[in-house]
Image (cartoon, rainbow, N blue to C red; front, side, top):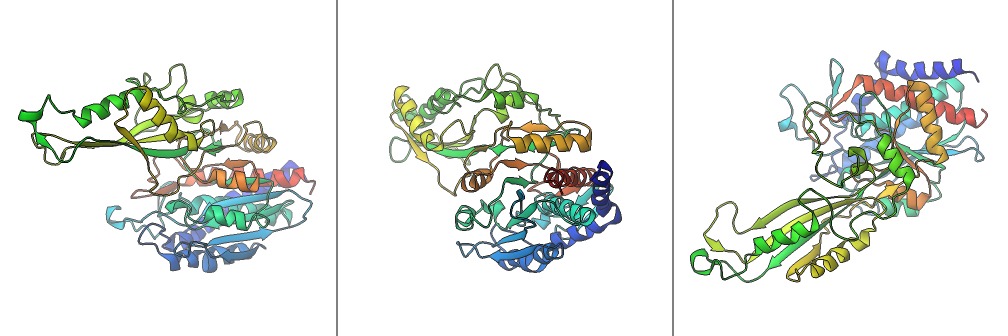
Length: 465
C-alpha cells in the first residue's frame, strides 16, 4: 500500500475526534464510576468490561472474554483478541479502566467527575487521561486501520485491567495463568504524562519503589528535659545522624548497594537525549542536588533516588519538654533494574552497622505489593520501529526514555510474557491526574490518534499486507 493510504488512515483516526465520535465514546467510559480505591465499586468495574468496553471492541471484530480476579474482592480483567493469521506478529495493547477516588467535593463547582465537559482545549472528567482517554486513543487507532485497510495486517490483543490504581492486585497471577492467551511480540500502552508538549515520548520501563522504616527505640516513655537532657541519648539526634550517612548534604546516595551498578551506556545515552521542558506551576530542579556529574534526565531515567518520606519523634502536634525515647523515619528508594530489590534492606543494615548505628532498626515496609523495576533495551528492534513510525508521522523523533521516575506493572508483563515494553503517554504534567479537575487536552488526543494510527498502519505494512 502507498503512503497515501497511510495518510488516509491517520486522517480517519483524527476525524473521530473532529466529528465528536471520540468524545461521545469517552463520555460513556467516564460515566462508569470505576473507583478501585475504597470504597471499591466492584459492580461498576464489572460493568465497564461487560457492558461498555467489551461490546465496543466486539463491534470492531474482536472476540472478548472477561475473567474474574483471583482476589475476589477486586475487579476483573477484559481480554479482547483479533487474530488474523497466527503467523503474523501479535501486538498486546494494555490499559486500565479503573480510576482513583473521584473526590467530587474537591472539583470545581460546575464540574462533575463522571460527566465529560469540554472547555476550550480541555476535556474534564475522571479518567480522561488516567486511563480511559488514553487507552481509547489506542483502540480508536486500531479501528482506523481496520476501516481503512479492511484488516490490521497483524494480530491484536487488548487487555484492560480494573485495579491498576489499587496496585494491580491479582495481575501477576492473572498473567501467569493466562500466559498463552496473552502471548505477544510487543506490549504497547498509553499512560502517564509526556515530558514535553513539543516532543512525544516512548517510555521503556519504570523504577521500582521500596520503603523502609528506620526506628530508634531507646526506652519506654519520655523524661523531663531539664533533669535528663544531656544525660539520655536523644533518639531524634541519633536518627538524624544515621540518615546523614545514607543521603549526603547534597542529595547523593551513600549506601553501597543502593547505587546502580553497571548501567548500560545505551541507557545513559538515551537518558541524556531526552528533551524535558519545565511546565508552569512545576518546580525548577535544584542543580546542586543529587548524583554529581549527571544531567537532570540521567538522574531520573538512569539512576536511583532516595528521599525521607516522614520523620517523627516526641509529640509534634503538642511539643512537651521531655527527652523522647522513640524516633522513626520512613525512607523511600526509587530504583532501576540495576539495583536488586531484595538487596535494599540488607545493604542498609550493613551500612548502618559499619557507620556505628546498631541501635537503628531497619524495618521493611509491606503496606502493599510494590511494583518491581523494569526496562526494555533502547536498541530493541521494536523500539526502533515504533520510534521511526512516530518520527514519520510527527516530523520529529520522540524521546526514548529508558526508565521513568514512577513505578508501574511493566515488569509483570516483561518477565511473564517475555515482550519488549513500550509506554507512549498522551497527557501532560498539569492534567490533574489523581486530583480534582482531571482533564485531557484535545491537541494531545489529536496527536495520539495520529501517531498511533501511523504505528499500527506501519506494523501491518511491515507484515506485507
